[in-house]
Length: 279
Image (cartoon, rainbow, N blue to C red; front, side):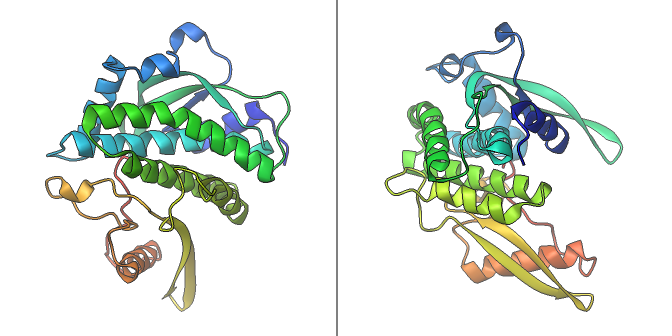
């Protein structure tokens, strides 16, 4: 359905308040991406330090892994909401990291999020191979500076970061598609972006998988994004492998996710699905 960028941003704001996105705002309220992700940037240091809220005992490599997962997921939500709405490939012209307040079980919780100042072309691209190529090139072009910087600053390899970036984008598309009742289309369009030959996003491990389980005399089914990278959460104090982690055996992942589906039906006290804590 053709909505235009403005309608897509309104929808995003309601569906995903943990990411900020604006089409029209004073440029002075934002920093250009090049300045934000510059060498020795205070914004980068603040974002790395923020990752400590997700676990104890992080080193710089773990902080970098969580930051790249966090950022690519939020960028994927902001850009993906517009792209999946009408095919337009947005560009990020401004960026800031800000605090916001959300409500959890009746109490207010302060957290951090990226806020993107977005420019959207007047005419949307078609949802075809050309649209996928344009989105891929824009996403990779935006992320290159960040990957290079975090490799120098924290020592996390480029390959590890690109896998996490692809996971973040693919996960964001799945979440958008699920909220819009267009899951199959969102998965198809995500794969057209992350599975391009020669792309730094390409890996055989990243895929979507449908997990099924019997519960309350009925069958439950849910699609999950299986990771190609590792956020290194298992190396933190008291940390574990995420339920969709590439380092887990495939059947172990499925058993964890089946337990999550059973819990969602009220059948067991198994823990909920655990993804990278910073996404």
